[in-house]
Length: 65
Image (cartoon, rainbow, N blue to C red):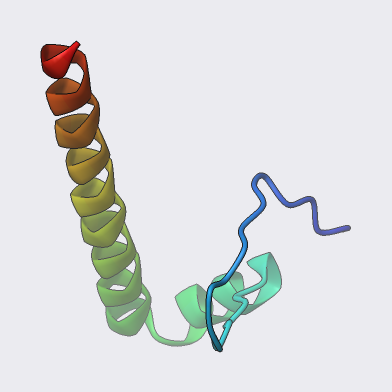
């Protein structure tokens, strides 16, 4: 299966990128369900935090107009 990025990003400094392939996630699910669950939970929490921050930013921007 080919990797199809859904977004682009430009780093302003040095970064470290970790890629978890679908196969790696499925392997983790099959070998260590508690760790897989913790990983998915934390990814979900971070995504939610970022979505909330973006929502707040847009709200403030629209209220200032």
